[in-house]
Length: 160
Image 1 (tube, rainbow, N blue to C red):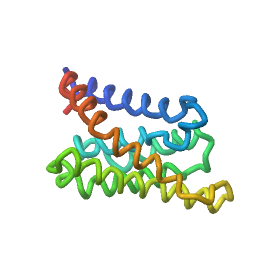
Image 2 (cartoon, rainbow, N blue to C red):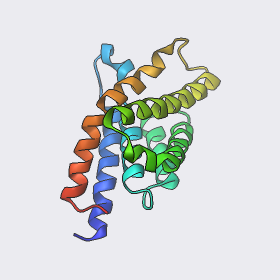
Image 3 (cartoon, rainbow, N blue to C red):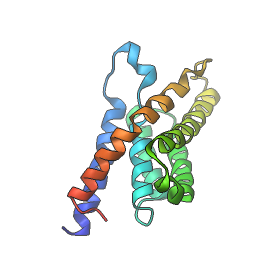
Image 4 (tube, helix red, strand yellow):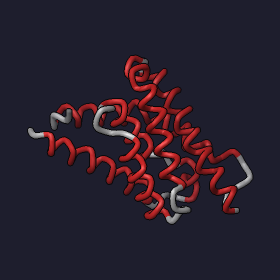
């Protein structure tokens, strides 16, 4: 397979993650929606740090801002920072056990959620509780499954 096929796998996984970010959920599950875009981005940055970086994170964040109707640049800034931190830590994250990776994902996505909550506070749309961190916990719990799925996909389509 050519490298262009690998690009399409990356683009399709990010588009699927963007779609999962807006799929309607029951009211009881809305607070715990996993941050699929952030998780997929972290995976690709860890797996292919020479190809996936801050620019792609910025574009994915702008797309997420557009489809969710959030303040323009909120997710773009948060995902760019997330990609930067993942680029700094990618060698360590690769060596971690799945439980250690899940803990690191909790911290990284918690930071992502904190930035988004900060912007929402500035715009006056934030809730006054700590439930905004629940997606970080759910994402950390889903991380081992998602990373295995994306690794299988990466190897099946020879994404390098």
